[in-house]
Image (cartoon, rainbow, N blue to C red; front, side, top):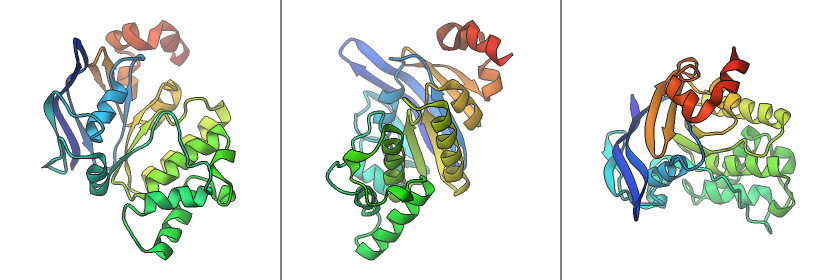
Length: 243
């Protein structure tokens, strides 16, 4: 089943077309990676899907229903939630209360919100930081808090914007394990990531953007050998390392 479908989605800022006629489909139960150079339009595409920006052209459908132009809160209520590159926890409240804010997307019952937050923290491997203030968390812990808060909303589609940026190899392995656990719980994932080995290992399929346009789409093994992708983004060094 197709959960999310973009058709000829475009966004222009003055003379710059940040996203140009982007069409894609995200299937239920899939992990779809989105890669490309800085400035390729990846985050702009996320902003369009989640209602933070209105498109100049094109439309967005979720489970066959038009969601183009809806507010971020309305889209979140429907089951699409995103994380951000730069994490911004509420610094003066605990990790648990940070996550409860996400839980109130689907319940106004405090006791239920507590349980939802506990479960999200456990999934994100952050239960041991339950009572720590947000401002006291390390970078990898803030990344996991961002994830836990998103999970608490009860998403059908989880959109992750560079969840592994700034992490060490060991921390990347931990995050990969966490995300696979989320996927096994039935959450469909769309992920932007510059840590190529991680996104290649996680994704069932990859879409490559360059200058706002989709230049390739396919399985990770196909993308790694696509001449257009090698020229625009991967480079011969990556191909050599993979070989």
